[in-house]
Structure formats: C-alpha cells, structure tokens
Image (cartoon, rainbow, N blue to C red):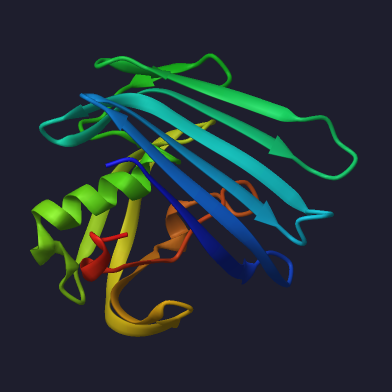
Amino acid sequence: PSTRLTYLLTGNYRGEVRGSARVQWVRQDSRYQVHVDIVIGPSFAPLISRRMSSDGDVGDQGLVPRRYDEATRLPFQKLRRVTLQFTPEQVTLANGNQQEALPGLQDAASQFVQLMWLFTTQPELLRAGNTVTMPLALPRRIGRWVYDVVGQERLTTPIGDIDAYHLKPRLGQQRPGTELSAEVWFAPTLQYL
C-alpha cells in the first residue's frame, strides 16, 4: 500500500553530518512512484537538499522504472536537475548518452523499494555474509551496486527496539566525491522497511 516514512540520517562527508529523509511510496494498480527527499544539515539552512523521484511499473520481478528525476540544491548555487529515461532495451542518462538496460535495473530512488521486494520474496538473501547485487542507473553511468549483508542487529528507535538486517555498500563500487552511498537496515517485522 501507499506509505510515507520519515528517517533521521547520520553519516560522514568531510566530517560528521546529520539530516533527515522522507520516503513516499505511491502505488495505483501496476504503476508506482517513489519520492525520496533528503536534507543534510539543519532544515533551516541545509548543506544539501535532494529530491529523487522514480516513476514506473510493478512487474513480476519487482519495480520497472520508466523515468527518474533528481533535483539537488547546494548553498548559493542554482538548482541542479537531472533526468534518466528507461525503456526495456536502453537507458538515456542525464548527459544524453544511451546505454543498454541490464535486467532488473533500478534507479537511486527505486533501489530501496526493490530491495524490500527482494527480501520479502527471498528472505534467504539476508543471511550474514551474503552479497546482494543490484544493477543501478545513476545520472552519469550504469553499474552493479553491491551490498554486503553484515547480519541481524537490534536497533533502538523512538518506537522501541527493532530487529533489522544491516546491509553495507561496497565503497569500491562508487566514484568518491560524486556518488552518495547508504548503509541501510531492513526490518522484517515492518515489512522490510
């Protein structure tokens, strides 16, 4: 069902950063939209804010993106927008280059919902020591994003303790300084949110 979630973010980018994120999942029949809004720094004066939106279909193998839009705002700079267009055969990147679409290809916004679908349908993927590989279309390239399953951990949250599976991206798969990565925890008792 359609869902909206709000998260607190912590991380490192030239030092410790904090922020918030909101994920909105909208589904109507076989169509979906997912919107991810990220604010790094205080909400009244963010260091960076980014909105990522994915629009597409829900198929037998999960999400099938058709379009991805990203808008990024940095202090004292113009809003930067990028768009990716997907067909079953190819992806048009933000610079206009076209590349072959890999099976199961996701975008930066749809990847987390696709991971939820994978874990719901194939929970054995979450065994500690496993890797989960996802083809990912980013604004400048297509690649395979690899997550290592660290294991199950108990998290203390404002709604109580939650058991969740910890996934960590392999940083060697990204281009430092140009691509943000996310270490994530998926909670089986919360439909793998």
